[in-house]
Every structure is written in C-alpha cells, then in structure tokens.
Length: 110
Image (tube, rainbow, N blue to C red; front, top):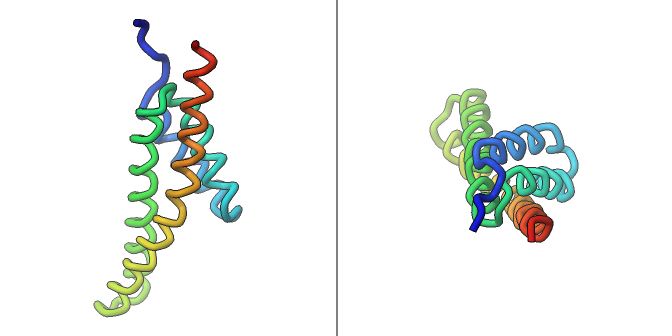
C-alpha cells in the first residue's frame, strides 16, 4: 500500500482562501473551494476532515465582526447564531466538493 500524496493543511488553506475569494457565488463558490481542497487533500478522509476548520473559522470571524459592531450582548448572541447558520449553509456545498475532489484523486491513483 502506497502513501497517498496530499496534505491536510494544504487542503484547509486552499479551501479557506478560495471560500473567502468566492463567497459572493452562493453555491458554486464553496463547491469549487471544496473541490480544489479535495484535490489538494488527496484522499476522501483528509478532504472531509479539511472542510470543517475553514467553516468554523468563517463562523467565528463573522460572529466576532458583527459582535464588535453591535456591542450589545443580545444582538451579539443573535449575530453569532446567524454566523453559525451561514457557516452551516456554506459547509454543505464545500463538503460535497471536497468529497468529489478526494474521490477524483483516489480514482486517478488507482
């Protein structure tokens, strides 16, 4: 059994960077970011693991930014929940793209 090429950290960086650049494309942006990250990960398992760190960081940045602007605890909590909801909507297509990218790399190797 040969070791699969690819890196979890590289996949997370590509997914995070591309999702920030392509945020304005509702479904295709995270799908493209996930696919490229899945290609960089090399396997389906690493691609699936790499999806969640950029999604969680996006939710935290959004909640912190809106929370800083509102400076009220109730609105900060609501903004945090909104950021979490947006992040979950964003993670779905990214996860599908990552699985497709990881599957593509595994079939290329076989």
